[in-house]
Image (cartoon, rainbow, N blue to C red; front, side, top):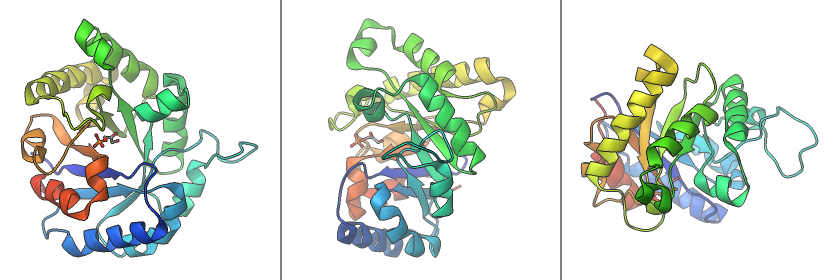
Length: 246
Ligand code: 13P
């Protein structure tokens, strides 16, 4: 298996003090043969943790960016600003942004183009609702999300996060993940040809210290996008240890 990537999405959590303590604990506890590790703090904590992370193997990611480089977009942050801070990765199209901010596939695609232009690696999230899973239409939904959210020539990372598994403590089963991952791989190859084989697919949704080994052993799972468990150093480091650094 190739080197996996474990991404911590801190969402809207923590003070500056919490962020600094968490980063210090992660740096000091990082195993010697760690996989790629990226943490995505809130915007307000990026500059604070950047120096410590820059001196460590842990990468710095953000949780969103605008599609433009600059301009009249009150409250938004551009990919150029993130790159300027030393950010290397950016999560785009998370279901919480799609649901709470009405982000459409097209918006996500434009953001992915802008992030790539700024030198960032986009981590584009896709995932179905519980209703879509149960009705059996989830494959159509995921296929459309790939088609709509990933730009031509996409060279970033895809994160498959079933919405029903996010923050519920109930991860998808290994069978569900394995089946969906092979569907996603086939779809990426269908839409992107040979290049679709190289796109890494992460799983996200209630990954924790207890299920990380089984989730990360599933074929096609190139790593994990971790929410709640990324806020606790011990839990996140256990997930990191469960990943392959081969
Ligand atoms: P949880 O790990 O808390 O389920 O969150 C997953 C997620 O949304 C990561 O982006």
